[in-house]
Image (cartoon, rainbow, N blue to C red):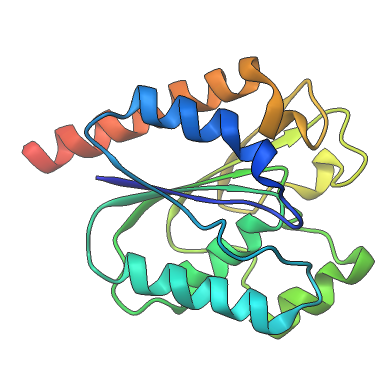
Length: 183
């Protein structure tokens, strides 16, 4: 089993510290990868494409994978899942991802990437009730189970109580995948 975390636009390492620590503590026997080597903006198309290509390389190895993505990272995750030929992504979990947003150049970036609204992967989407960057009404997809949390955009990155809730969901998903694989 593997978890891949794809951060959003301009995600400083400071914001990932809590996630890196909490995922490592809660998933000891799980490969955890962060796609945080490239610091990007939504209009830097070559960088976006590189993150997608890196993710495709990883998920095409057929290893069961859960992708966790924050903000624009969810757009990159959907693009990689859609373009990968033989991925084994069991679940996509997005946090404050602008799935239905086209403002502020997001639509242009999605068009460049050819990102679909939905992917053929079980999807959980989360929005923040107080999110001014990506309002919660833009964070769901047609085929997702959706929930809004009482937080704002960066709350998904820095609030321990939000990380704890998401990690509980990840644990249930991870266990379901392990149990299904063993049967």
